[in-house]
Image (cartoon, rainbow, N blue to C red):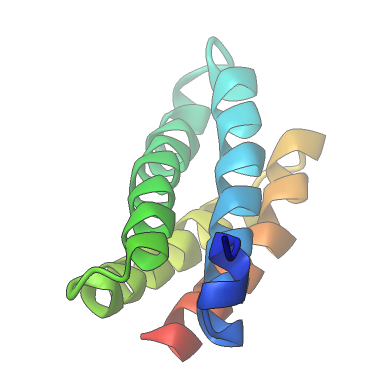
Length: 112
């Protein structure tokens, strides 16, 4: 039986992999933002949005959903907004999000 990765094209695999990396980085960042004050609320919200949207994007891409291009475009927008927000903060957990978010946005746009 073929593994799922063998059934997907390169751009779809890359999108899924980058979505998973963005989810991991943002889940950690969101946890670290809790209790850090009002200046971190938007970062927390956007990181939670990335976790939700990027997880959904990876699932729809893996299943070959007819909606995977639409969700990939949305995922790219959310990742870019979150990366822009994270770049504004000096916290290590925020800075660690920026690259995975930019990579996710790029691969999602390519796949869409």
